[in-house]
Image (cartoon, rainbow, N blue to C red; front, side):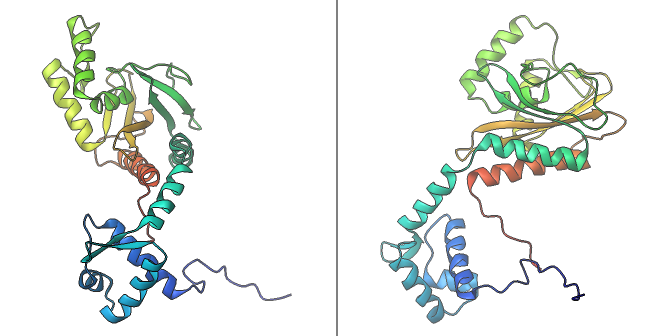
Length: 273
């Protein structure tokens, strides 16, 4: 029998070094908020100016970079065409679904994905754990903007005028005051809570409305910085810690961040080997 060979990883496959340098140049220009001079690029890429200039000539010839007022370099029309084409092929909701599937497998906890239907979160995906939690929430249900994790995350991202309309209507005659960590929240406290939710991109419930159930959620954003959907994880309070910085809150927050980066087209570079 022939000897069994080790599997070849991407890092071991032979590539084209000059192409990788060209792509590094494009990545560096894409990540810069302003045009970069040849000297700037040379320092950041640790390439000599004479060697780098040859790449710039080829990339300019193909339209992938352009000179900004004849001084610095920036991305050109060909790069824009590639970016627009890539973004047009991204389905934000399917990306959220795929991420939820993976997080469900990795955590074996109950997962949901919600979107805003104009006045409340709508559950568009529900994934049970191997030991489902006993909650009366299922696919297609509307959740409360005030008594759900996803609802508060959506509220935190609403335009100020629309948020004030919703808060005015609710606090004029609330059925029950919202709670967080066992404390009731009047309007001022609730608004402060929403500001924190938006700043941290994280909302956690510690059995506040569902006895013995903890929930944590995080927002997925689109290329314009608007909220696209919310991914939430839940489980029994004795099984999962959802406090900020805990394993499950970090898993959810990291998951939402990865989907946001994929939707927004930010480069996902491999970790240094």
